[in-house]
Length: 505
Ligand code: AMP
Ligand code: MG
Image: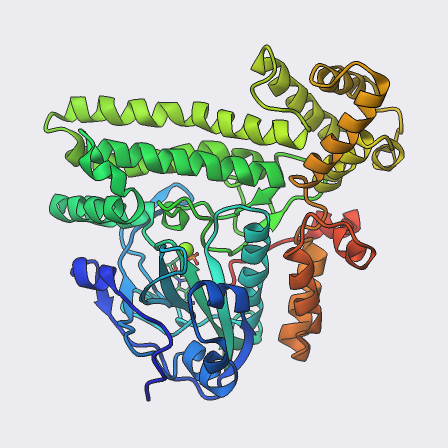
């Protein structure tokens, strides 16, 4: 049974990249039921929301009724997982249905996750559970609302089928929208097989799709590497400035589009500590919060290796070219990080006589939060109150209310260097600064205890009300309203200390 032509598919991956995938069909499921439909994203994709709500939508998003024009396929990819190379991963439980051009003219992938085993499934059952799929909705929509590039959830449909994990869980299929699903690991798959022709094909396709301007560059493949580096540097800086821990930054989970992808064991940090790890499988802390910039650079080096044969005939020359790009990553990253930090501090980046002074100011602020175990999100948010003239909310976050004195004095001097000298001018500048700071320092983030509470209600009790309320709060992260206050509060520290996230596979 095919549903109405709701998606206007134009499937360039299927058309142009034969040999990069296996055509495959989703499993039929017994009792499709729509749990979530992202109306605003559907509108962006020019979809007919009324046609996709109710039974028809449930059948479509559970995989029972493929939309016209879909050409479902499982993509091949490899990946470095926790540092070790797996030459064959691929979409074990995911399918790319095809691509659509959105209202802004951007090409977007429409893909299922949890739609059944594929030839890449290895030992897996190909299925997904309601909890982890709704988790991807919450975290992805939160990231989007924070202005951070991310894949997004279009829909989640319950399948009516039990999924066996440590417990038996209700099954679900997620429909994911992405700029593309090309990963560092996609390049590695063909590079590891010595298939230079396909590495070149994939690089050409990637340029056409993500960096069309580079097509005419003198060194298009080197420029592609540079462009991916730039996007990754910006992305990781964004993560670091909101306290996001991806949790499993394997090269198969790094999209060359620069979008955050694969919301598995990810979580937001509460009390600031760069060593924070939540993932139950990250025993060595490889993907701890503070490790993320280095890991992103390491992953970029794996992409560079895969591209080497395209860069120059002479191996040494190719290595030198790639190394130069990889070496610039930390510099780009620090630039993005500092730009974000200056905005969070209420400072106009680039106006300081010496940037290193601002970098030190930001570093010392973080050191202060860490030493006093202050909540990362609230620490920044309450600094905006100080700019507005009220210090008490910030001081209340510290066990010793005087602990921030010295740092605040330095910050004030730096702020004053941007403001007028008259007291009235300073007050106006303070209010404007507070407003600017509140537009970049969120009040509401996906607090771990709130996420767990919402998912437990949905998965165990079939009650989606807490999920919907939380989602609504997460889409307004910069608003500070009484009805959102419960979502802004940190978890009790005992809860955070024991908090573990799971891949949900
Ligand atoms: P992830 O940890 O979700 O990034 O997945 C890593 C690899 O395992 C990918 O190739 C996935 O497609 C595959 N995988 C994860 N869970 C399952 C599952 N339940 N069934 C089949 N393959 C899976
Ligand atoms: Mg993955």
